[in-house]
Image 1 (cartoon, rainbow, N blue to C red):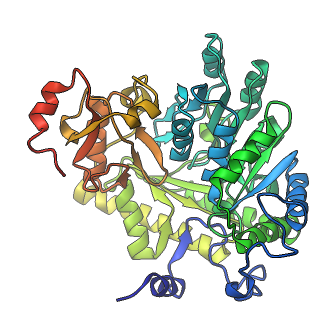
Image 2: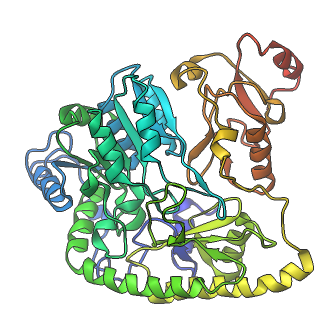
Length: 502
């Protein structure tokens, strides 16, 4: 039987091209990587002369100070447990137990874990949906101000920008609103670590007034999986409290390989990486220009800026919609993998997302372009033979209002209550006891403590029928969901008690 190591080696020697993270794209022949020694020879612990990440006084302190200077932060920190550890530290470090935070509803599941751990109350900002593509739009600064005007005490605001699909919110306005009320803006910029290095990309959130920014180096830059940075600006944040939580949420035995990789990544990008970025931007622009010529498949481009809360768009995310054709997002991703040996990052109900980076080769980008153009050309024949597919789930602009209700209780309260499993198809009107999300991107469709709507049930069932990656349910087959056992649920609980065991 092949083990994980054998499977990884097999993949590395194949001709499958990665349009997914990590951003180094396994380009071992590139000058940045070809001289990297055997990793075992560099793997150490906190021995003399190599400092301690949780009490840095020497080489690690100096290294992170250089990172902070480079990015324009007052303090920067290496994250060896990924952006998730930075998000948890940011949320817990800016709140006290049972405080209230404002959070965009499309945040990564790790943000919800931070809410759970500090037993926080949440007020949600609901991004609009770009109807033609089914992707999430930006966060509206006016709606944020409306929430803050209610007078409820709020400790912090947390948003994601860019989204998984490259959509940018107006960070400058959002931060201005937050600071007007004396609270910090935390930005999950996990997918935007490359912004400072390219002219065609949006400005980084830290330059636009954000107080805490979390970036995943490994998503879009040449750095190992699991490596990320947390940047902090003074003024609205207790830095010592952030550092305290970093010690809680990060390993007490941080990998020196990962930390050295982060240091080397930033040094590379500040030097020859900038030249490579210019070449990448030129190649990417040519690909995007050609893909705009498709007749059936459609490229998400900056024509959406100015609508649905979209302030800007990251062109390094190549998002292609199959809406109106005979294939759904999963089928398009499968075809790219099986017929063209191109591995996408993710798919939605009717689109796929490819992550490109500075390490992509001109040949690799050309393969992506040619594959989409060939599939688009083939769409004419498929349309004649199969017709358009209107039976698959489509994400509409009122998705959040259909899916999400105001929480009946805090996430922490819901998590601690007694639960029972019932069929998902029978769960409308019940209060959820668990998360449901597509992974990737890991954005919850249902959160514990929320009432499950009929639209949520029908859409999730449709996602399963379309073979989209529905996760979060303890029942891996996705037939059952845990709901809260409380007064008012008795009739349905009795009805389902005889057949509710997965």
